[in-house]
Image (cartoon, rainbow over the protein chains, first blue to last red):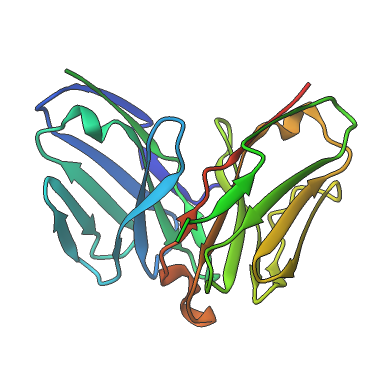
Length: 110
Length: 118
């Protein structure tokens, strides 16, 4: 079954509001990757985190990897309509292949 | 580079028919992955190849599914016979890297094939 869960499944925000999606694994992850999939599109790589407690920023996006390497989060500050899409985390649960999370669908209203 | 290329982009077929999906990975990438995406099950890894050799097919749902990679620039995913529950978007992705760190390499996804089985 699915080992990497994300919450919330769906969030609708007004443009300018912040957004956070959380990724939780039942097992320790050796790394975490984040992907974005626009409506009707394909997943596109955003970033990778490897170290416990690691924090990385890409403009308005902040990515964190938990101290226990079982969870991660993606925070978007001041959302824009271009942020619309589904955000997936993906991690290696110990079998040298990525397991994708359930995804969080973000809708941004102008 | 043109990125990962998949064909067809859309396929509508009747139950019982054979379906073949095609993928051309990014030149120089030695790993190729086939994924299936549905609302119910999310993004699932079906099989992946390294240097044209199938490494892990544990995600292939059943014997009706088969995948081949005859050379470094071409792979197929075949469903025979197809069933309505096979309706999904099928993605091909490619990456490069060392096997022990495979999950640490960015995967490049193709545009996908939307399959509808009626």
